[in-house]
Image (cartoon, rainbow over all chains, first blue to last red; front, side, top):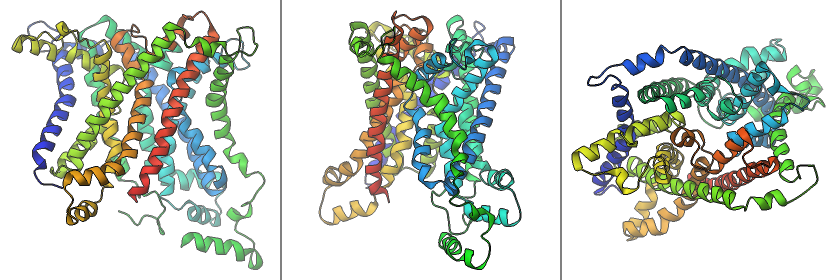
Length: 271
Length: 306
């Protein structure tokens, strides 16, 4: 298999690397050219000192955290309960978790706007706070496949039946079992689901724009239409943030008790 | 072993001692209540909105049943949007599949040091999540009218990229930009299939006198085909739903289907709300078909990966 291939594969990898790295370098170089004739961090200073930048970023960060909390509260008890008590419901629950992959965000928010609009029984879009709730619900839906997959894999790696048995024979209530035993054991899985959710929601454009929320995604698009150098700086900042999140996720993922799909006979046998 | 022991406990325990509390309600009539929050959430925020759009697509503005909205999707401007979306998604999925497969082959089977592979894989994890607005900005700085590569080509080689008819803000520019998240996605999903090509097979083929071409023609390609085709469909769906990147690049002038729907939601540009619903349902149908085929092909491909 390996005869004579390294030249060809080296060329392919170098071409791939060039394709991936040139746009990053270009954006970086572009972002330094705001002052004519010299390299400066002026574009970054301009972005970071803008109050709109801070307020939209804060808004989106809060919305993302709300979506993470809501998603975890929804997914963890459900996956636990279905694995423990309702195995026959599992295909349904899993199918529902995959549905967002075939519903494009623009279609989802279209349905939300119509269903929760002015003449609905639950007119969420009529108030600002109601629209914020709807935005967070939309984000929970968008990130559901990733959160579900992460938690489900984490739950498969621990023996929830034995843990539940142990907790209850020590007198723990159902709620306490979930909060005190199951949650900590799938913590790393939740964290990796949370990072994915965060990276999806922070710069999200479609939902935020169509719901008229002062979020980071619409701000970035507006900035791209009005300015030249600041968007390049934003691209670099955003790439750095994505990179940091993924690095943190890798860190947490490798620290999980085991990433096998099947539960081992005894828990935590894998390093 | 653990499960067997638990099952045994479940069978014998009632005769000797009261069942432990976690087993007492094992067949409880109210167990399904535990799944209720999840089912209610997905029903309210996922199924009901889609159902609303689907029923709306088959109704007159005044409420009666009709197929007219679906027929109206064939109107020239809408059909043109779908055709543009499909062509762009096919082009970007095809380029992404070929490029991603080559890159995956190079790092998995290409005989390169293992750090290259882990570097490429890690980078792909980041790049496949680096979509949307920032990606568009990076490409504007690269291939825009005063982008780095455009200017370098002009100054060093006297080559006017935009003189050739290329524009970052047109079909091939978008396809090239999509490649930035399509190629890494392809690499990530096809790597398990390439790993599934066991070295034993090529050794067995070689010991029976097969050339490398014969090995790929009769063993490698047939085993990989379902995976590659499935990944192609995944990439197709991925491109079809892309909206933020297009808006950031072209400012909603490039009327793929998501853009048309975006404008319809903003301001009823089709002058018929029910036609808007039909447009959305058409998108779901295309996404559903390609994703379902992807999952079926993946299930088929996984037979070889055990």
